[in-house]
Length: 187
Image (cartoon, rainbow, N blue to C red; front, side):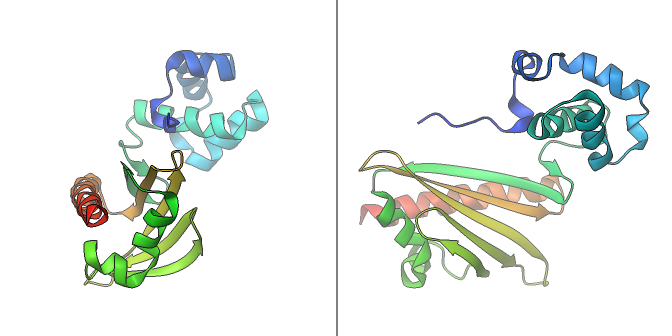
C-alpha cells in the first residue's frame, strides 16, 4: 500500500502543480513580504488569504520556507518535535489493534509504557499521553490500517518532543518496540 509523503517530502513539481509556483518562487515572495519576522500561523494565513493557496499547501509552503530560512529544523512543528515509525505485519487489522488496545496484550511487547489512553476509535486510532519519569508529557498517536484481509500496518507518531536528539531516541525506541510487537504476534 503506498503511503502519502509528509509535507516536507513533497517534490518541487508537486508544489508547482498544486500552487502554481516553485518553492524558490514562494521563498522570494515570502522574503519580500517580511515573512522571516512572522509566525508560522501568520505566514500560512498570508498564503491562503493573499495568494489563494489551499490550507494544506499553505502549511507545506510555510514549513518549506521556515526550513530554508533556518527558522525550523527537520521534525520540528509549532508544538515541538515529532517522529513517526510504521510497520506492516502479517496479521488482520483486528489482531493488530488488539495487540495495542488490550492492556494485557500490550504488556507483552510494550511493558511498563507510561501511557494514558485519551481517545480510542477501534481499529482506526488510539490517542495517548506518554508521561516520562520527570513528569514531561508527550503525545503518542497510534493509527491502524488494513492492507487486505491478512496484513495490517501500525503507525506510531510521538509529538511534543524536546529536540532532534529526543526524536532520534524515540525513533529507536519505537522501532525496537514494533520489532517486539512483530515477534509477539508470531507466537
